[in-house]
Length: 346
Image (cartoon, rainbow, N blue to C red):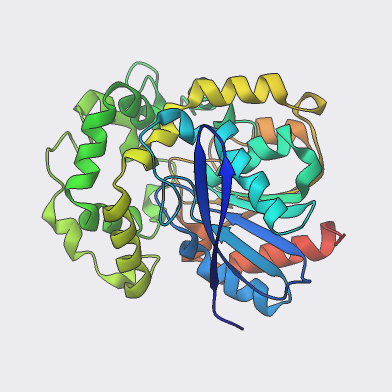
């Protein structure tokens, strides 16, 4: 396989912006576009990009707006799905394709879901990892409807596992400063492997407002996180240091700003969605069974997706949140089988 080549596309959306992306695989291969979430860069898709390029696909992954080498601003609305999708459509045009298979993880899955509902004409199919459609892109109020109240009694956990998102809305600058103070340590804990012992238990995100911040409301990240061994992480040393350098360069303001657009994203979808939000093309959902925040294993988080996707395939993988990094072979096998069975090249 050839090495990744680096490119950028310029577009206009709330001002001129640049979307940086990496690419590999044959130019005439079926196009797969991988959309990362929070906090990440394009290269976190390396196991997928490498595998599918070797299978003959043309694979592309952008640094999402506010990350890596893409444009970084301090305007919260620049990280709304409407503005972001303008950039993704410009990317598709740059690649001289009318459609692609779009694959998203975490916030990337939310963006792909918005794209699918508002612009179904550009989707051969979509793959959503950890975050099902018809949830995140419809805002925090939609997420709260899916909380498992057996795990999160409302009297104790009013916002369930999504309380951290309420904390961001109420304490944005404080939350951002906390992450920026120790990017190395925070990246290490965020990119740790999943733990099956946490299955069915409340997530650590469920008391962030009540505690006045992360990890019990501490003002600095515990230094013990610096010592998490690489065998407990989902990334190798090279990618870890790339991630740290990228997040130190941009800071967390733009990454966290994705959480400041719940109402804008909901309005965008409800006003512009096609076919009453029903998706007719193939959809693959990959569940990370040990993910306690994006929990589809013990809650009804995936039910809205099941109601709106006519050609839905679901796969569950025993992994934590970073399923594509923690279990790349299982993830790639699920995607490859779905592509062969459900998606036709065009």
